[in-house]
Image (cartoon, rainbow, N blue to C red; front, side, top):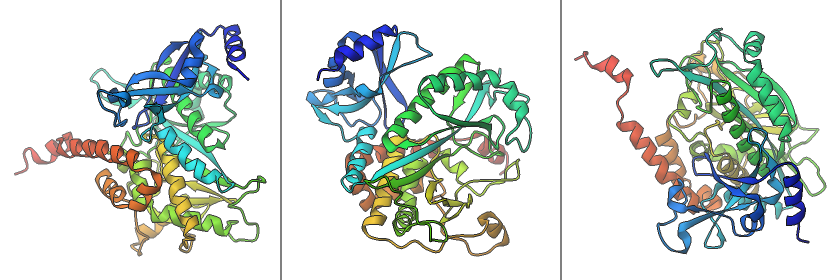
Length: 443
């Protein structure tokens, strides 16, 4: 049945005249263009066209049939944007030469999910966005947008929530209008840091929803005179932002695959195998889940003004243990490695590929950790292996993890490694203010 007339009539009745065709580049940054609603069949069947080399990480050339990137509108994703009257948002899949583009991260995730669906399984993901509200002062220096937000331990600070109530309520109203099932809004453990939680969804829908969340937050923060920032750790003396994935699998009957009521941690054998896969591939996953130079300022055993750090430095897991890389919670898994600078499609795809490797090979998880690993670290005791200390080491680990690259897709991984090595080289060759302060007059 041709659904275009019905969809178009419904949108026009809501005052919609244009579609914002949105995809993301390799870095996970939203891109797109405005196209007329009247040509909806073209945008769905052929796609909105973009110059391929103008998008980071496509690997497309400057001429020929595969030089054009086509973003094909996913018609079920169309929804009016409250902050852009007359415009409907649409999620797009990347195509080139009439074929799915293997460097498109949304296609990457769909390919991993197809492998999972072939087993009769579904992946559900609850994403927890943490972020900062920032601004620049008259000298161009970045700082928290709320000058009064100065508590050393600001978690759940109601005064800050009241001062920023206009932005937060604007977010609440807009997200609800976009179909988000909100669960909570709170001030996090760093000055200027917030978290907004909403209900979990199937993996692809969860990734799409996070991209829409970011777009909304960028627009509304600007409206209220601040910058919505997914920078993992903008302030050296404060905790950073994570993007934790709460993951569970269900079978064809909707039963929870990871849950086992008789186990001490309420985890099934499948869950332990999945955990083992995550821990085995954790170094390589760091590159995709924590993909910036700044990410590794978060993934460090650093002091915090709040007296508390939640950074998942060590490769282990434990029951409701926030000092571990994997936290088990009532029969589901919280993957604590990702931060909000990641390409969410690629991060979920890689995490799933690693977990499936653990399932396929029935890898054995180590014993769980039942202690505060930061207290153990402070005592000088022997620690579990830790994650890579910088982006360069994480990229080396990904390049060497041929099993993960093959499972995930060589095309995307090659582009990712090439671009991220350039980023790491640029950082390594830069000279910071810290170096001038320490060395300029020292010798």
